[in-house]
Image (cartoon, rainbow, N blue to C red; front, side, top):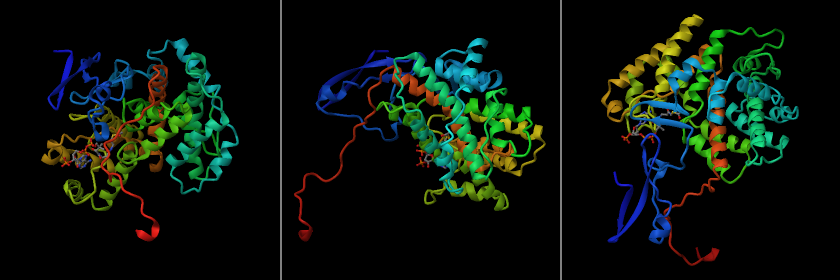
Length: 428
Ligand code: ACO
């Protein structure tokens, strides 16, 4: 293959280099397009064809259903690693040795206390507030309590900022849930693993201890790993672009949390469960919802179906579907919602509307069923996604800052009014 792409505008030819990634993906490098052509730009709403960066963190092949973190397959990581190992891998590029992992965990624990004044901010929210809005606000508020900006050229400062947020974020996650449910705010227990500690902070009753259930620990660990990174998705791109103005790590993460909240992105896990509940209330009439999803006059979409990148299957959905079956049977939970989900999936996979558009279940089609079986309230589902995605956002922010990427500032094609003379108010 030639290493150049040629573009012809008005009979004049311009050449642009082709860049090839380590997995042989090819990109046209248009960095010089505007200056070479005297102002021509590319336009690509939703960035369906635009690479915003070169990245060495996550590889995915949507046609083949491949997802790898730093070269390791998601299937192997979900089976053999734990969430903290995966977090280390994403952020620092290599799987940790036992000593490295122990130090990482101990440093995280030493930063897991949140300033008590954060509770006053939390108190000001009404109970009706959605936990994602609260989490985003509290993450941003952490900046006020940790005001020193991070020198990104100092590995030590970068490391300290990373372990600080990994320590404090689960506390905020647990507190948003406890506040909504009128429960006293608790701290965790340093003798526990990262995921065990999250569960204890969320569920410990004020007048009793919390008994760990290994089924729940394993299920949450797996879900967090599956959500840990997904290259340049909406929330990650938001984190990178916010951070590209040299905004700090915590506020960049807060922007990512807001982007994740939407039902077309992370908010889909809550929307899926609400949709399945609605179908159940409607006597399990899946046909009605299939018809609504296909009706172009109806804004309804089959939540948990379709993906910008996966056009064959979402490898995370395959793992989660098996896990949902396992977790429900291990916990002895019979949930009619699981049967509705399986029925809906079968119908969609046999329907030409979904087949022709290559719409398959995504990571969030089955995750809510597991969260529900674990006793996690539905409005917390997207918060759990954020907890899982945290290492990915951190890794992407770190990569963007250490590579000294320029500020993210897209162009536009202006299609508004051309120059008009100002009219005074009485002449309008
Ligand atoms: N139900 C019904 N039709 C759908 C669905 C769906 N879930 N998803 C896509 N389509 C249709 C569109 O209407 C469009 O049809 P058309 O070609 O006749 O106009 C076609 O499939 C292509 O859809 P786009 O919206 O152009 O695809 P895009 O890549 O922009 O969107 C998205 C991807 C946002 C995930 C979309 O599939 C969707 O809205 N899914 C439901 C929400 C969801 O589950 N989001 C979670 C994604 S995973 C994650 O973020 C963690």
